[in-house]
Length: 363
Image (cartoon, rainbow, N blue to C red; front, top):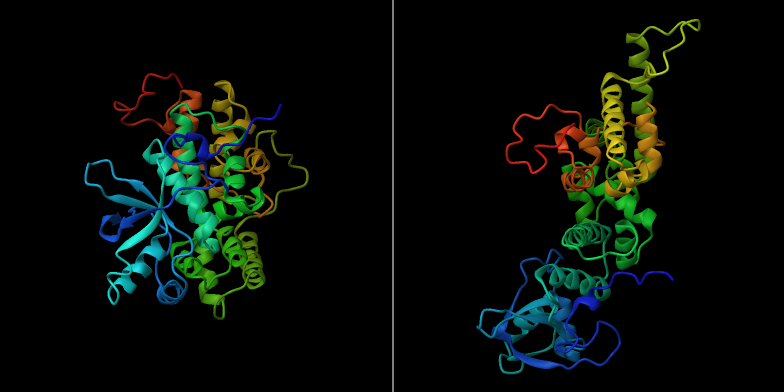
């Protein structure tokens, strides 16, 4: 029998609140001054003028969702509806009595982590998301699920699949957004977050090393498209190949490389990156963690990791270093699985592991 997918609603006290589905939920009218913005809300709350006009004309059609602040103050922290609340605050400047109380649905998540998960799920269901919004919420949702999992909460199936299902996007799109989140340079990320850079173009850029991303800006005419980024990347690759061909002599056909020798087509940095991946996979294997488990934990493609380990660039023509490819949180999760400190996983010489709980692990 298939396991039930993870749902935040399973962790909200049933006697305090209805489930997060189509069941009827009681609406409470809460004094406006008792409502507090949620500091964990990362969604855009600007441009509320049009929303305020709609609310003034039609009233608040959809109540906001709040959680009681557990400090005895009687205040409520907003989970979903920040823009609606800010619009009401603007309307209250002219009609304070009409907007003195705000219709709200009260939720009681069992923990701060579940509150933030609920915030993300509620906003995902009620907002028109930009690609940047989807990227941020998927990344944060994943971090929260990983934290729940570390506390012993069972998350059915693979974490990546649970996030994709919760965000209602494909696993392949989630992987693309993760590449953007991890690898897109700060200057291009700003353009992506403001919507001037498309998701497809951002992904093409994020597949390039940082120095090549900077070169694309100087070569691109205006905001690049995915096609123009690919064309510029191809041009840069040809330039790099020409430069490499001038600085390296060709290997004689009679000279067969040793079984463990790295291909001469790899630049020095890529050779070093391959060695780090091979070391990481080898020490994980010795600790009983398979390459598929490594890929799942690091949120990376197993195919890419196998390419890196075998000294081959991936389908994008690159070999990234483990440090550049993986988040520290993911490396720490792999550390927990193997019993090895992150330095040991990366093939570094530990310098100061006195405070590391894996300090006594034999590497």
